[in-house]
Length: 124
Image (cartoon, rainbow, N blue to C red; front, side, top):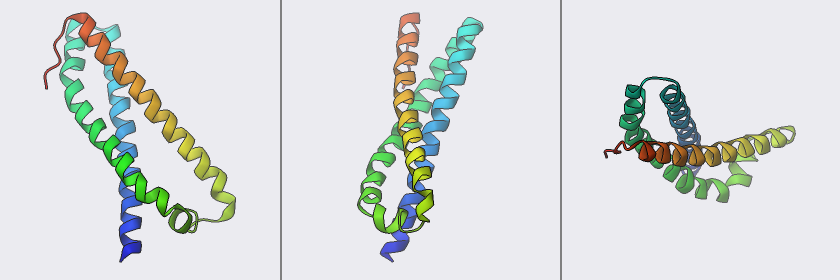
């Protein structure tokens, strides 16, 4: 039973990572449209910001909390479930995921600052 819970945690941890990256991709796209477009495009970005932030924050919390048991059981469930020649691929996957989270945080700050500088008010 514990093995099933660990595998499910690992799956939902990956889903949370994907949700975080997807929210950042949507935010980035809306920001690009706002920079090129009409003033209403900035309003669209401003309206989407709180919802996307909630998704991203919930996903980030799950990535952190779900990552704790994943790290603890890494050798037995992640590493133990793959062939030895796939270890570099797992290392690359984790580097890309960490980079995506860092870039996402920087994007969120930039968008928040851009919205605040425009005089728009972010509504929760």
